Amino acid sequence: MKAVVIAKFGGPECLEYRDWPDPEPAPGEAVVKLEHAGINFIDVYMRSGHYARSQTYQTPLPMTIGMEGGGTVATLGEGVTGLKAGDRVAYCIVRGSYAQYAAVPAGKLVKVPDAVPLPVATALMLQGNTAHYLSHSAFPLQPGHACLVHAGAGGVGQLLIQLAKLRGAMVIATVGSRDKAGIAARCGADHVVLYREVDFREEVMKLTGGKGVDVVYDAVGKDTIRNSIRSLKRRGLCVNYGGASGLVESVEPLELAEAGSVFFTRPHLADYIGTPHELKQRADDLFAAYAAGRLVVTIDREFPLAEAAAAHGCLEGRGTRGKLLLKVSH
Image 1 (cartoon, rainbow, N blue to C red):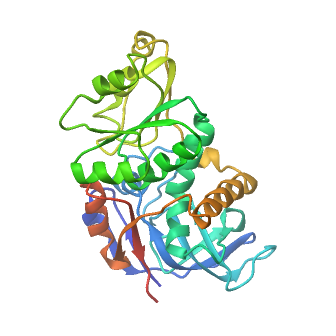
Image 2: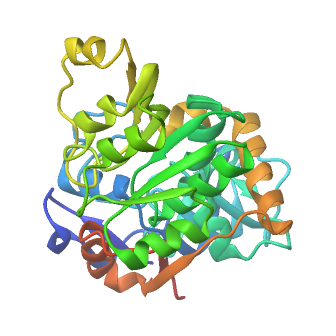
């Protein structure tokens, strides 16, 4: 089969489109004939070597990257029940989706309802489940809460704004341009801040009467984290779940105290979809919201599998306005 492989850590130029052995399903696995693969920052962290020491997301070289995919079941391994060849499925947090086929543990696969197109289902796997656990579990938003969502026009940001509004929260979103501001506003953000033109912390304090927000969802990382912490209300929570501007390497404990005895966490999605039951609950919730017209999923662009390097360049250049996908041809 064809796949995108890295033999060393580095930039997008390390992504090689090449022949790779066809996967065979181990007991408890299914081989998925992929139609789409999601492009996510976790792929960048794996490609660049930032996760080389991670026990949760291991990166042995050489490897096929990609942590999100959608397609149809091709073959089943021993002991797999509840699935059959031809079932439409999607998954995330299993490495190897930048390929024509992938072997996936059956418990990581979710069946895709007829009402949900496969590109949308793929987009809702990693980014959708991330937005879901952020708004429902890491900090369970309720009416009366105020939240700050960085990168409000990105793939996760758009979904997170919508889910936060469905939960009844007030949403302040930051974006980098006026056209992105329109995207965040259409997703339901109550206030949109152009972070290149104003100090977002000052704007947050103005909008909250000096109190700050209950929670900050920060996927930008290095450039924003200190002001994110300072944008919180007393005993608020800063959730750092990515690093578009660079990964956060340290936070001084005293900073948390000085900001109002606030809390800081850096979660992995894998810990919030740790069982098939929890994964299914989140996916079913997202699929139902999409089918009911309460959740809009924006596919920004689809790149051919062979152009994965160009897709990474687009993502790292922070030029996205929704989800980036790889289209897998056979």
